[in-house]
Image 1: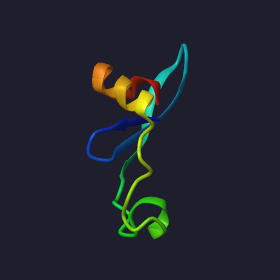
Image 2: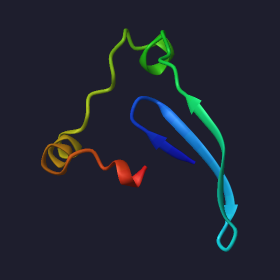
Image 3: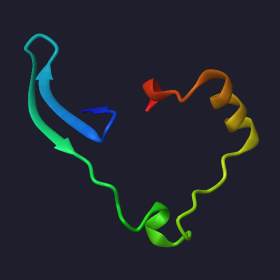
Length: 65
């Protein structure tokens, strides 16, 4: 499974020696209720100071998701 900017998700099926074949491509949609299913008045939980400092210094670690 691979994710790309813009809410695109692609799914591949395969094995090491057989290669991979794309079996699906999907487009995510924004949930109109907002974060936490509408239970947070449209606000996200504030980021912890040490996490904020890391992201400001190194950027968002997309490769680890």
